[in-house]
Image (tube, rainbow, N blue to C red; front, side, top):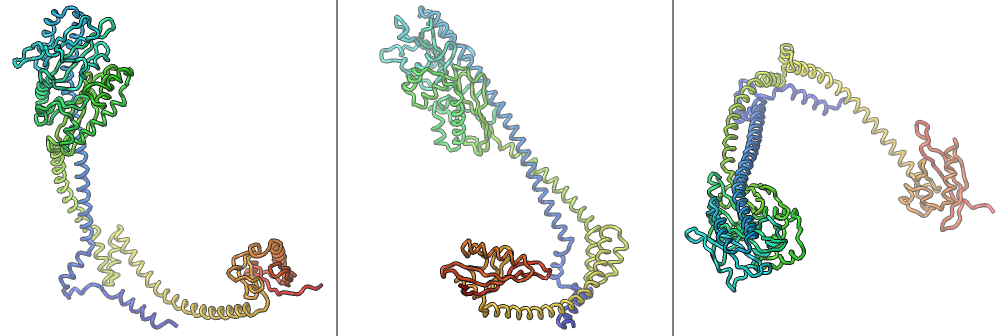
Amino acid sequence: MENPANQGKVVKSEQRLATPTIMNDQEPPQVAHYWRQWLRSLPVKISLIQLVVALVLLLLTWWIMLGIQRQQLMSQELTVNRHLGQLVVTRLHEVTAQINSLVTSLSSLAELEQSHPQQLIKLVPALLDLESQKQLIAGGGIWPDSLAQKPHREALFWSRNHLGQLTRVEGYNSPDSNYQSEFWYKPIKMLPTGKTLWFKAYQNPLTKETMVTASSAMWFDHSYMGATTVDISLKHLNQFIDAGRADIPGYVIVIDPYHQIIAAPESLASNNLPRSFNTLADKESGFHKLWQKLKQVDMEQAARAPLQIKSEHRALLNHLQGLTQDESLTTQSLLANLANGWPKSPLELTSFTLEKDPLLGTRAMASVFLMPDTLWQVIVVTPLDTLVKEAKGIAGKVGLLLVVIQFLALTMLFWLLHRLLVSPLSRMAQALYQDKPEQLEIQASKRQDEIGKLAGAIVSRQQQLETALASLEANHLALEQQLAVQQESKKQLNRYRDLLQALMESSPNMIFVKDLAGIYQMVNPRYCQIVAQEQRQIIGHTDEDLYEPADASRFRQNDELALSSAEAVTFEEVLSDHYGTRHFKVTKFPIRNEHDEVIAIGGIGHEVIPKN
């Protein structure tokens, strides 16, 4: 019979299915309940999902467009920065090339007129007073080598006075002056003919002019005769660069190979120039990244430089007066690059962005260029904030347009989804809650699309559920009857198990069961007593694990004979252990399952006294 409790559950379940879960139209719903139902409704959920998707698409589109626009503007700014840098470097290179030609001309003139100093006194000022570079050239002259000049000749040096006129300076010919030991003089003899060395900026001790000097060696009959120099005023060099960068929105810094600033904006170009860029980076943290970049490119140049300097020249450079060890190494690299003519043209070393430039106060783009001949590094810095603002403005306009488009598309999509999908689904849900399958049948007959198919499937599924419910009740009764039979079988099985256990424990014979691999599956207490081992030490092991190899081999052979026999077979087995040699009479037999398949081997035995 069917359980009354279960029958009650089925009735209650049917009542829940038949009872509408919404309130009667004649009963006004509470406001809170109404809003909860409204928020849980399908139209609201779909609208919220559409709104979230639209916002995500809008944000992603705005972010991607801003990134693309910023990348394009950064690329344009880098191009502009490079063009401005090339313009500054090219203009500066034109000047230094003219100075190089002038120094080389002075060397050629001094070599030709070395025996006519009065002629040189007339010609040198005329060459130095070059009209196109009159403001830049602060002086220059001829510096004979005392070891090569016989008789000794005086140095011929001119500098500009406060009126801008070239006047001869005799201070270097005094007994106290020894220009040949100066750091700017010794390296010149290491240059081949026609090469010009632009050495580190310094302040002339006699004229007090801050300058950078271009020098060239004089050679006669393969003998070093001295050097010629042309001095460039740093003050006028800054004015020249300022005039050339009037249209550049940023600023330009020029440093020599020894990291001394020789040209900079007015906020940096004080009367203390030249000053070390390292010192500037220590005082102004904003220049630290730029300083790190400069050191990096210097290391790359040093690794690239073909250091083909003779050992005696290297030793000489290491002991130059007024130069540190690092400056001596820089001079070696400088001479090696000049000797090999590297670089042939202005070279861009690196370009990078500064998050906040210390002078401009905004994000900036910086490019570093290397000038040929002088090996000066020209740093061009331009601001980026204007481009970023422009990118954000464009992205904002595009974003606003997208908002309008998304709103219109969302409104149209909501109306279409509500008309084509949400309203039919709501009516179907209402019919299910009110248990009105006829409305679903009407919906299935009117519409031929997926909504109609869904309504038809629901009607068909409801009929199947009713049939399944009846079948479920019948199956439930059958299961209860089967469960009762299983319970009785279980009780009977437990009785058999108890009888078997009692038989195993009370039997004076040893009883055991092995599987076909010879592994013990069951032993009784008498077996454990005879072999003097615990049950856990026997179960799961073979004769080879428990006994001597000879005994285990005999036991295994007897097992095989018993398995191949259709009936039980009795053996007289001998066991050698710590008790000595013992004899047992063991009956072994195959154990079969319900399909008459051999699944194990059983044995019953007892100890016997052998006959003499």
